[in-house]
Image 1 (spheres, one colour):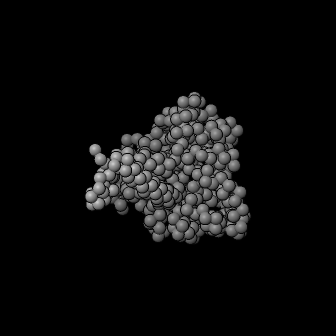
Image 2 (cartoon, rainbow, N blue to C red; image 1 turned 90 degrees about the vertical axis):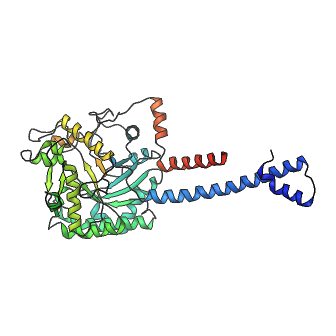
Image 3 (cartoon, rainbow, N blue to C red; image 1 turned 120 degrees about the horizontal axis):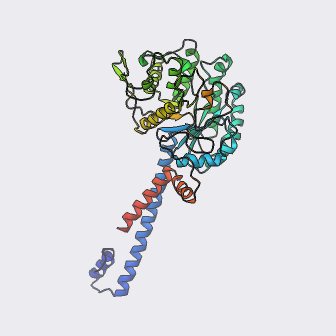
Length: 425
């Protein structure tokens, strides 16, 4: 059978009234195959180029992959090495993490892991950073830029729980510090990769029950509103540390623990919105949305920067047990994996960072502060919510190496395979 690729030169022979020899047909066939191969090669290269540009742009807009992350606090003297932590996170398929500083050992260990990390600009640096953009530039050049792009630093949390706390001087410098950090990132061409944010505690709210009644405190609002305006301009979400555990601990007589733990309960009814809530976590998120809406920022996304449940506490810390910690974190993980919204914002998928990866034995404060960990210091699970913990075997290491391939690379390889399959057909 003569290939259709040879029809053009064969037609020329017919028009000329001559008969081609077999070698001539073979030569024509080979030349046409070479031309076709070159054409497909050029097309394929353009396809890869376009795909890589689109992928980098789309992925660059997101600072949170999926819905589940974890806070990696390190106020302890018995934790595994950062390299072991990377192995642990990959085994648990946790793709997002937050740290409370910019520790170089941690950032180096995360290089090539594919895990997205938000670093913290500590409260102690805010006054200095607020003075001028050059201070922020120096900090970023020392603690962020050298680790990119190998380490996927996707955000800088400027301070932690500043507004609503007792240090009023920090209230005043938070916005200038955030602006200077963003300006420095902009000058370095990093604003499409690194997001600027600042997490808040529930102390910024005047009230939060029922959710629709939530408002920002009057003394906080003059500082919160311009901060929200700035974050709205640069596309940053509102980060809130939401703890049903703390709410229950402070008022166990009036809060149904089943409501706090995602267990079966009558729930609450919000008469203003005509919405029913069967768990406190959703109610706390919607309370934040209500406060934002009243402040004029109804389009701002809420992300939970911290939430968790203590597995141990002092005598006056109601609910701090291993059983309750497991129940809360198991049910929360199950809820987040459903990738759904809240009653008030059903189309806004809820995302949350769990507090915390490990118990931190050197943290000050009540006993509960040292007992929020999902894992023990040796990497084994503190209680079973579906994670496996560290498994030091070569087979696991190989599997983890494969799983560490980022989504963009996987998508790229899949696209290549699809094109090759088409060419093969």
